[in-house]
Length: 407
Ligand SMILES: [Zn+2]
Ligand SMILES: [Zn+2]
Image 1 (tube, protein in one colour):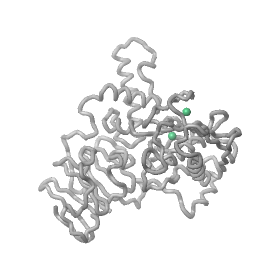
Image 2: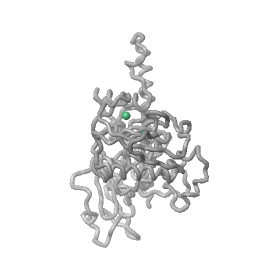
Image 3: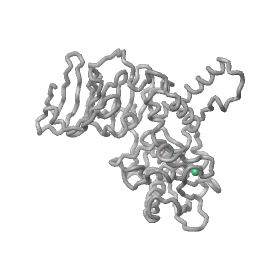
Image 4: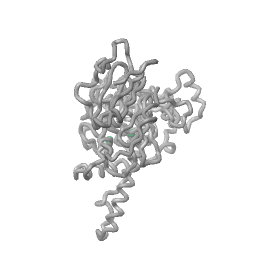
């Protein structure tokens, strides 16, 4: 509901963004990043290239290739596309995710030729009782059958189109799992044999709630691959590659997921959703768009809306959408009321309801969130509509209803 930060704060800050490395990344991080880009973005590391003479020309070529892939990855995840391996870029690379590539656009071409598919759950390595696992997978298939006019039937022993199983480490399909964190699961495109099969990493801490990794959330995503869907760069889509389950956010197919799965099918199913249309990710070009909050973060201006934010960086033309959680993990809530930057203290302050959070260098300060009454608001004030920090004079103005407060 506010728009104020922009009006007053014009910076030409000499400070580097907190996300930029002040020194080159450690060798281990560099290797990790190259492996990540090889796996998910089709990067060919130096060692895999034809070894000609290692003259400087070839070295430069290799660097350019790496930079290009980093930029591709940064664009996909809504990061400023600097092509540099910033700390923030590394942090996004290290987030738990699906094991499939982000650049293979296999989407519309490979689909099942039938409308009723069978699936079977392999009975070993299950994280919970068979009945609980069955219930989770049945619910996950239901989301897709509601959207795609397909039916999914469970089989116990017989051959099935889709086999769902849990595996440790190397399970002989060329894509070994990596233990806890990192890659959580992967799936195969529709087809015979292993085609359509879904594999979960048995070493993850799977859960039915928000501890560890929510099996339902990951299953809905992987089942999308089993139906032929690729990764989506829409952070509101189930087919977004990184794990972003939030307990208060209902798991639903987004508008993008539904249109992607329906593309080869007749479009009349759109009418199925007239009662409860799938959620659309906010669009920056929507003339009716309003923001929840706006703040600066060093050189950037950040616009917040629901679970999402757009980052405007003065060096880059494009303003891309991403999840709030991609920068501040789960430390900052979604659906914010107000945010401001206090540059003298190098902090950003976030408000939602009667609470506020202080983040320094993307880390939550100890003891937060705290109650806004700690700032001196009377108990009748239940939330803040907007906040504006004045660097010259070093004070903050809060707006609540028709009142404003100077802090
Ligand atoms: Zn995936
Ligand atoms: Zn596998």
